[in-house]
Every structure is written in C-alpha cells, then in structure tokens.
Length: 155
Image 1: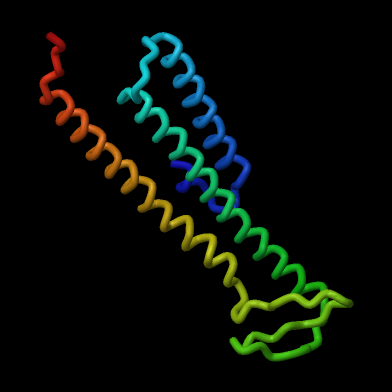
Image 2: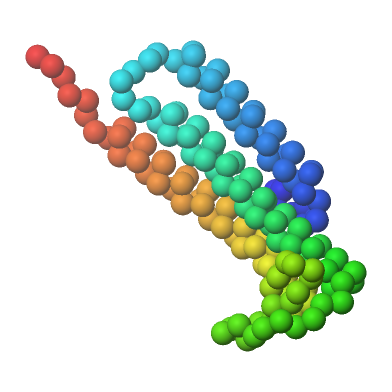
C-alpha cells in the first residue's frame, strides 16, 4: 500500500515499510523459537523468508523512486540557479555543460526524472501484487503436493 502514498512523501513511505519489515522479523524470531528445530527447511521458514525479501525489495524500490525525485530536484536547481554553457556534443546527442570545473549531463527533456519516478511507482503497483500472487500460488501448490506425499516409514 505504500506505493499509493504520494510519490514525494518518501519518509512516510519508507517508515511504514521499515516498520513492516521489523514486525515481520520479530514474528520470524518468535515463531522460530517456539517450533522444533530441524535440519531441513520448513514451510513456515519459506513463508517468512519470502516476506522478509519482499519487504527488502519494496524498500529498494522506494529508494530508487526517491533517487529519481532527488535527481529531479537537482535538475530543477541547476536549471534555475546556473547559466550553463555548452561544452561538447556526445554520441547520443546530449550536451554536456560546464559549471565551474564539474561537467554534468543535462536531461533531454525537463521533468524526465519526475516522470521516471512516477513510472517506477506505477510499475510497482503491478509488480508487487503480482509477485505476491505468484508466491501464494506456488507456495500453496507445493504445500498441497507435500501433503499428498506419503511419509516414508522406517521398518
């Protein structure tokens, strides 16, 4: 649900996701300490590992969206504050400009980074629910297969 928060509200988005990750890790530790230890991986371990990796991927996506927004702010700042002189044309046709000693690439269109942040956020709207759906289908299919396999009995 954090992808439905306003795109520029990074702190709330990230704090909610981080809180979810910490709660999930606490559930994992509590559950692991209350069930018997085995040499093999249990289904509950798979569930919790997926949830922890899921939250990690979610927070990584939020960081990428925030990076795009930060780049947009830098772009806006450089366009407003500095008069830049063209230095050279690159093979892609994008000019490099000189600001003192530092050469920085300018985007081809204004607002490109903002558009990238919004696009990435919309991709996440679809990606994370689909990832959840694929996991749930495969997880419960595997659990059903395991429940139908007769345990080996040592005689």
